[in-house]
Every structure is written in structure tokens, then in C-alpha cells.
Amino acid sequence: MNRIPILQMGNTLLVTIQVDMQDQMALALQDDLANKISAVDAKGVLIDISALEIVDSFVGRMLASISGIARVLDATTVVVGMQPAVAITLVELGLSLEGVRTALNVERGMELLRHAGKGKPLAR
Amino acid sequence: MNRIPILQMGNTLLVTIQVDMQDQMALALQDDLANKISAVDAKGVLIDISALEIVDSFVGRMLASISGIARVLDATTVVVGMQPAVAITLVELGLSLEGVRTALNVERGMELLRHAGKGKPLAR
Image (cartoon, rainbow over all chains, first blue to last red; front, side, top):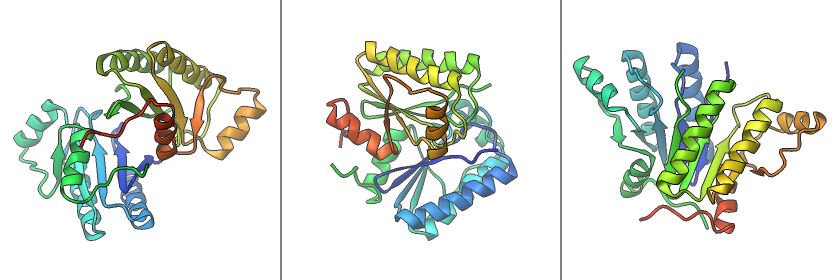
């Protein structure tokens, strides 16, 4: 299985999750993200989950764990693009994604990072 | 199968291709992109293929076709993140991706769009 690509934009990293995550892939993503954050001195991580129709406790834990790893590397994580139905299910399941920041879409997520002093626009 | 998410950043759309495309998916992506370009008045489309280890003639045609559709909708398409091995194979196969613009990564692709007068930074 391929790894999930991590795109760099300025000092922000962007990950689009499109497939159901398995243990192996989630671990690889955590590894890759941690390495990339430290390699490029990233201050923000955007994780787009707009393609996910189900976010179970495994994915929830993964998001929280990535967010925690990024935090100790001095980067802020924002989960963006959550479908309304996913939000409803999450709350019904009692999964509150504690410690994970969210935004409606990538643009709002970038704004949030900028306001947190963690994002800067691309060099021109 | 889920659709490939299209992320909007300013007037640029970003698509990350992570899985091997099948006919159905490629058609859905073309549809979705055309609709989104016209809905949000996008001027640039970035297609990241860094996760692809093989680009065969089907994917090559799809990229050319998306690029053509975007062009008639007044948007410029840039394919970014091609792996070196993929570039070698493409040329060996005689697939030149005619009419498709390429850049090394997302940042370079955005620069290219800006210089083509097709990209503008996010509103602040």
C-alpha cells in the first residue's frame, strides 16, 4: 500500500485522507508527519477528512495522536472538512476529539493557523 | 468507492491522487472538477501525483483531458509531484503529457499559477 502523501505549502503541511486507514498506514502517516514536521520546520498541519464517511474510534485516536505528536514538535494540527454526518456520529459515540482543533474547510483551517501565529503565506 | 476530494485554496483547486484510478473514478473526478471550477470561479488546478508509482496511458490521458476541460473553463492545470521514475517511464513509453503543465511540487505549482496570472494568495 502506498503511503499518504504530505504536501508542503509554506510552513504548513497538508494531508488528505481518502481511504479507510489501517493500523499500518496510520503508523506510517504518524512517522512521516513527525519526520516532515521536523525536517521542514512546519508550524501547522492540516488534515482533510472530507472524503471520510465514517470516523470510528481508531481514526479518532489517530487524529488525537497526530495532533499530540505535532504539538510537542511545536506545530498546530487542524482537522478540516468533516462531514456533518460524521460530526453527529462522533458525538453520539462519545468521541469528542479532545485536543484536536477543527475547521470547516482548508481555507478556514489556514486562517486558524495564521491567527494562531502558526501559518505564514507562501513566499512570493 | 469514495470520490476524490477537491480542496479549494483561494481561487486554486487542489487534488491529491492517492489511489490507482479506475474509469469510473476518473470520470467522476473530471465531472466534479469541471463543476467546482465553474462554481467557485477557479483559475488554477493543482493535481498532485506524488503518491503514484505508475502513470500509464490511461492516467496520462485523464490528466490531459482534465487539463483540456479546465482550459476551456479558463483555468490552468499544473500536475505536481511526479516521481523521477514515473517521468522516466512516461518518456520511455512515448507519453509526453502534451498540453499538461508540470511543476516539481505544490509550492512550485502555485508559483507557476501566480506567474501565469492565474493564482492569487488567500484573502487575509
